[in-house]
Length: 448
Ligand code: SAH
Ligand code: SF4
Image (cartoon, rainbow, N blue to C red; front, top):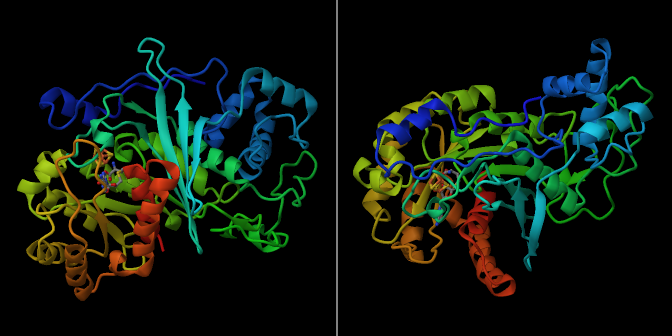
């Protein structure tokens, strides 16, 4: 197994660094240096089979063993090989000798008054640079769902002028294991793995534990936790029901790892979060949009933020390479897009910059013919930013135009206001609420 992930993202984005000046992308990427004993988290079934081969499992046995491991790792959430009762003692020992089931390390946890949780996760860093590789992951419970906001990179190579993450110099792509590992860590911390009531896989056969999956599931826990709801993969009420790739980083600059991770997270024999409840947000990496749809098949969100190229060039400098027309064309061709599976257009409300009624009208004109939802995001200020959040009345007026054009208008809902109100309270209770936390809070309105 190749433990070292290729530094940098695809050749397309590397070209950007080489051929254009710093306005598109900044710092070079840091290396990923794998731990001496690699974790099995993040491996596909095929890679797991190879790992089993490394510890001497005969080829004819590997498929069945993979099924067993998959169940223990992704359905049960085990953190060690010890408890894998359907796996022989010898194999458990052989696996433990060479591999771990480690997830990203939690170095800090903040729990807000309303149940929102933020974890600071430390990932293996490059010993040459000596800089810590940290990402954040945020869980936002709600009455009918629980959303996890997941990061795809440490930092981001892009420089959107209103985004705090874009100001961070250190950048490295996360591995598939580090991305899927965020979901696993969150489930660990929330006690969100299926209850021990479910019998383990029978014998050595590695068959599905519960024939028929969710239907044969035992009764959900008596007191459903906040945000808990029935999960298609069984195990009763789940706290994490939705995933948004809206943490740090540009997911389409790390598409292979994001794809591998999301295919694991959505696998019905394991974590089992439906692809309709997974949303990937991109700033507009046009050449990768179609592939994301084809290879992952999750929901798409596009950070539009402006209706004219001149302004979008400034807010989202990647627009100089892929302009609005090219971006919308890619959206029209997004595999599976339909009225039942709409693309979300994110639009950050910046005072005096993009918040006029003219802009709102142009926005609905622009999106005509695309199965779309529009998500208006109140701008979250950060130190030394030159932007301010649009006035609330202006957001409401803007939202009304969007609403009148037939789009659901999230800021119109009482929940949107509650979220903003909750943010203020959280701030005093937890010291500081980052832009990402607010984004994550706002993201709840996205995946209904
Ligand atoms: N890189 C991806 C996903 C992460 S950012 C992207 O850009 O889409 C998730 C969302 O938060 C994006 O729509 C982004 O434009 C928005 N965002 C970034 N900074 C923000 C801020 N300070 N206030 C409000 N939204 C912000
Ligand atoms: Fe990167 Fe997205 Fe922030 Fe732009 S908005 S700098 S793409 S994380």
